[in-house]
Image (cartoon, rainbow, N blue to C red):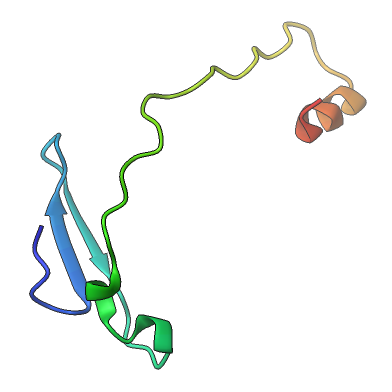
Length: 72
């Protein structure tokens, strides 16, 4: 991880992809340190989690679509 510039952070992920985080200049007090104010946070979980439910095999009614949107 490189942090020479206080507005830009570059790192290489485990799979070889490069990631760049840029912070625009600001007058906000909480961002006065730029990227030096950031700290590493361990992952809270790994993997994909549960698979979503399968879609119905027949055409659905508008009410059923609305219920799917509500998470019912």
